[in-house]
Amino acid sequence: MTLGGENMFSHIMIGSNDIERAHKFYDAIFTAMGAKPGAVDHKGRLVYVHDGSLFMVTKPIDGKPASHANGGTIGFRMATPEMADKWHAAGLANGGVAIEDPPGVRSHGSRALYLAYLRDPDGNKLCATHVVKT
Image (cartoon, rainbow, N blue to C red; front, side):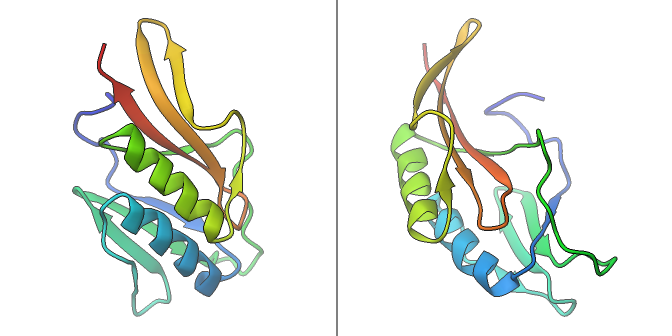
């Protein structure tokens, strides 16, 4: 797995207790990063396709309430720090909650990353990630 390279995942699917609310939130952050708004498929799942990746939001099929992963984070690759800031602002304006440090550069060993963290309306931890050229 490399940041800035090919995506190794076929898809990511998360649960939501309110698909309409999730649709508003995820449309805002996906369009902020240059993707198209999502569509609801015939099974009621919210679907986003961007840069060869598939991201889906669904009500859990077991009928139990959706819950976020404790310790889990979903990272979205950003082309620029400005795109990460736009993504973060769009999320905040649409029901997201800012978490951790404010958006900015963090050093990770020999690399610097521009990171912006949010929790979506269902509590899932999301991160906008841009690899800073050094």
